[in-house]
Length: 333
Image 1 (cartoon, one colour):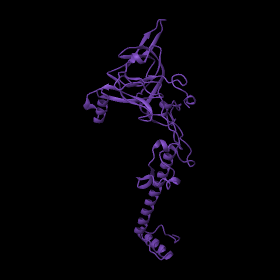
Image 2 (cartoon, helix red, strand yellow):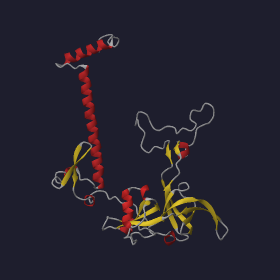
Image 3 (cartoon, one colour):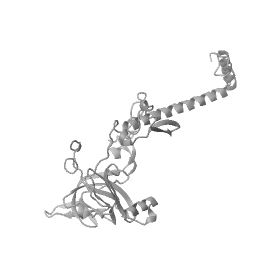
Image 4 (tube, helix red, strand yellow):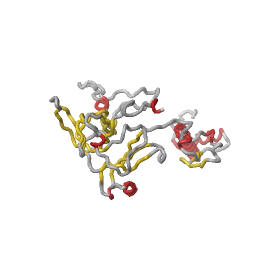
């Protein structure tokens, strides 16, 4: 390439000069086809190297959660472990249970509920007048056929205490056959929605029992209501996060843009969690400590608004107040 006028010569002639230079440097002739094969092998090597890095990261996460043993203990677990293949490589999978393996790792716990609740559908909003003459905005939650106990889980049988509740009775062809068999085993009609309420203590409910809202909630109780919020579609940072907009005058090139997202060369990337334009709404939202204004057999009226639009599925449970309705972690220990 030090030859004068090298880059002005035709491509075919430059290729011959390069091949001749490689031949003079070593005894082996490196043609263009040989270089292509070498690059292909290097690409596959880098792919396998990246795959090994991913496997090591996943194994470290599984070891932290207590699902997998460390690599140093692979030899000791060789006699009592079964090998499994993951992404083309074989890794040691201990045969012991997850609970025993988690003794030396992180302790993963699910959140508890303050008690067993019910499900309903948002009917709409209206207003009520109190005895003092105050106008209170309320939400009416309709309760359809369902709210039956489909499964009772205890620490002896499943490792934790929970009550599974089925809601919205439907025809058997509208759900899967395993779900139909699951409901039939509990002696209840087919239910569209099945969800658990995880409890701290042992459940006292019986399989197939009917849950009435009037038996669970009373007036002036506080409840937590979870539902799916209304989807807003793809929105910008001004609408989603309340960013300040730029000048709207002539010549301004930043009207409703989010602005800078970070430095260029260093770090040369966007940090995870950066507030930018993205999907807004259509996510699980919990409205906490809503006051119950009125309870009937087919509806629950609560003060304020709840997530979602009319007809949205809602999960109504007793409000979680640490130290009152649910024990504190220090008290649990």
